[in-house]
Image (cartoon, rainbow, N blue to C red):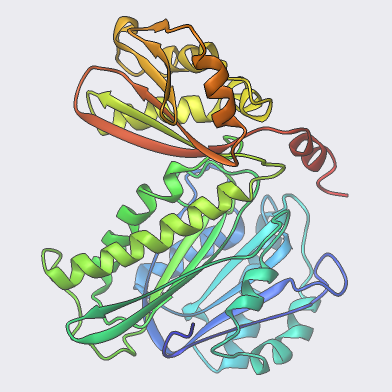
Amino acid sequence: MQVQGFKAAAVAAGIRYADRLDLGMIFSTTPAVAAGVFTMNTVKAAPVLLDQQRLLTGKAQAVLVNSGNANACTGQQGMDLAVATGSFAAKALNIDPGLVQIASTGVIGEQIKEEPFERAMPGLVKALSADGFDDLAKAIMTTDLVPKIATATIDVLGTEVSLLGVAKGSGMIMPNMATMLGFIVTDVAIEQPLLDQLLKVAVERSFNRITVDGDTSTNDMVLVMANGAAGNTALSDPNSEAVHDFAEALNSICLDLARKIVVDGEGATKFVTIRVTGAESEASAVQAARTIANSALVKTAFFGEDANWGRIIAALGRSGCSFRQENVAISFDAVQLVKQGLFIGGDCEEEATKVMKQKAFDVTIDLGEGECCGEVYTCDFSYDYVKINADYRS
C-alpha cells in the first residue's frame, strides 16, 4: 500500500554486517506535523535525546534509521554522530536538518562511525520510493525473524485517508512508552496537538501492553508523521466522528504492530493474552496482568505447556493489585481451573494443557472485585531465548 506524499528506502551501508539492509529512510515530500512517544528509561540513546528536542517544533519531514548499533551510552561522540548523520540526510534531501528524526537499534555502548552513513546517503535517497516500506521494515530488524508492517484505509469527511506503520522488536521488550522502534505515516490533515494526543492514547493501549522479557530499551520510540496530502479538512475537534474514525485506525495500526512484536519475541513459541477482569480499576487490572505476563516462572510454564495456575496466582499476589483470594477465578481459554481461589479438580488441568498446545491462547483472571478489566500480551520463555541473548553481540 502507498501513502500519498511519503517515500521510503533502505540500503546495505555496512554499519555492523556486510551485505545486509541496515540503513533506512522515510521521507515526506512536504513537511509533516509529527508526534512521538519515547522510552521512559533514564538511560536514553543519543537519537532519542535529539529527537525529543527537535519534535518540540511539532514538525518533521524525514526519518533516518539504522540497525546494528544503538548509539546508546556513547556520550558526546554519539550525539555528534546523530547530528552529523542527520545533516548528511538533510543535505541529500535539501531540507532543514531540524526536520530529520534519527533512530538507531542494536548493540549498546559501542561507538558508531560516520563514514558508512555518508557513503550510503546518495544511494539511499536515490532509492526512495512509494513502495519502499517493505525494505525499510527489513532494514530495522535485529533479532527479529520477520518484518512488521500494518496498513489501514478509511474515509475521513468524504476523503480517502491511508495509514502505514512499520515496527521492529523481538527482545528487550516491555516498553514504558512505546515499542522498540515504530514509525507511522499518514496522509491525513490534522492539527499537531490532536495528533500528539491520539498517539499517546494509541500507544498506551497497544505498545504499552506488551512484554517479551520485561526490559525497557534505551532506544524505544514511536514516531508518527501526517503530511495532509489526502486533502481533507484538517482534523481538530477531538469529539468529532471523523477524529473518532481516524483514532480507531491509528489504534488498530499500533495494536497490530504490537501483537506482531510479541509473536516474534525472541525464541517465542506461544502468544498469550493475559486478561484480568473484575478489577476495581483499569490501572489495577493492567498492573496485575503485567506482573503475571512478566513472571519468568509463568512464561516457562507456558513453554512447557504446564497449566501451573499456582504460579499465576502467586504472581497476582505480588502485583500490588487489590483483591481477595476467595474471589479469584482462573481460566485458560474456556477451561476454568480455579473458582473462589481454589482448584476445581477433575479433568480441567488436562483440558487446560490441551489449550496450551495451541500457538495462541488466553489466560483470564477474574478478581471478582469490580467492573474493570485490562489486557497485556506476552509470550513464553524458551531455550532459544537464552541462546539468543547469551551471545547477542557476537
